[in-house]
Amino acid sequence: MSPIMIIALGVLMTATAFLSGIFGMAGGLILIGVLLALMPLPTAMALHAITQMASNGWRALLWRKHIIWSQLWAYAVGCFVALGIWSILFFVPDKPVALICLGATPFLARLLPPHWRPDPTRAPHGLLYGLICMSLMLLTGVTGPLLDTFFLGAKTSDRRGIVATKATAQVLGHGLKLAYFGGLAAGADAIDPVLIAVAIAASMAGTTLARRVLETLTDAQFRLWAQRLIYTIAAWYLAQGTWLIAMNS
Image: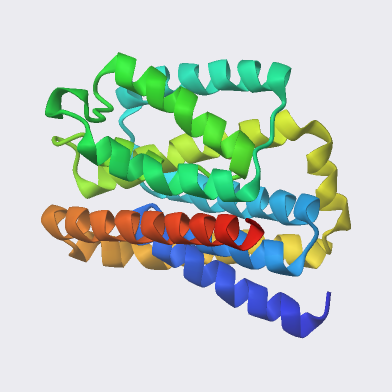
């Protein structure tokens, strides 16, 4: 890869890590779209996993005092259950179906009765969302806005706790994704080592720069803009999936 392309990707990775560093979302979704357009799928997925583990791992370290571990154990169990199930089935849906599933889930969660809506403080909810979110991760490479909807469901968590806890969950998810695909990790062999170093550095830089911005936001502002991002991204997924189905029909 040319030096100019490496620099351009470094800038993009910094920007997407900055966005995710503020809201704990969206950056990885933008990045995977660009990487898939530039690289073969195995290479793009491997590089995406590297950047996301670096970005979320650094974010979790920066906000480690705010991680709500009690919200993670049931979610983690659900993730491992999903890994076991899909390791047996090994089913990969068509892209339009995957996009529609990613886009529809936050709206479906919104339509649920109040006592059924996601609450990460309740273990059964954590188990269910771990199962669903990890399934989406294994089938599509990302969890989409559903994971954000889940952690925003904790009314008592502040913005730091939401960002830190979700980052920890994402490190687990991307790590299990690499374990699931097994040979997919070999896609990293095709990546320029310089690009890998740039990806890790850029992810950490963007996350660090976002810390001050997150500190200036109020919890009300954070939740408002996070919800807007979730539904905007979900609507885009639905539109893209519907368009692909229409084009193929």
